[in-house]
Amino acid sequence: MENAKPRNLMLAYAIVQVMLDKELSAKMKEAKIDALKRCRALGNLYANWGIRSDLIDVVMTKKADLIMGAGTLSDIRKASSPPKPHFNGVTWYEDPLSVDEEELILWSHMTLEHRPTEAAYQRYMQLFERVFGVSEDDILRGNLPDELSEVK
Image (cartoon, rainbow, N blue to C red):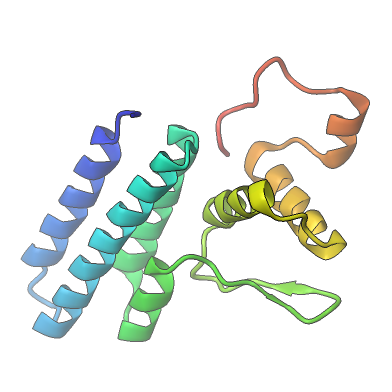
């Protein structure tokens, strides 16, 4: 299994910051600590799926930042949950408290078992380009770097 130590240390540091924050109510502290623990569990799940560790690290860092900055229980729940974009038949709508890299992980995992619709495929490619800086046209033309760049 890949080395989860850096992200676990980052999450532990975030938990300590929450615990020491004198301005947070006990309820908010508990909610943020629980949310950070859920993030760790999701990171472990993604690692078990074989997802690149640099991608997981970006997801965990961004989710921790969103949780730390959340001012309501609702925002804490949204930030710690997997993304749930909404598609109205024409446009995808994202929650500002979701993380593109995590949605990409979920689309990647889903497409192993199920053939995506055209709209789902387009969403997947949109996220892939945002995260890795490689477009569908680049892929189809064979204009790929030797190795995919680090996550942006």
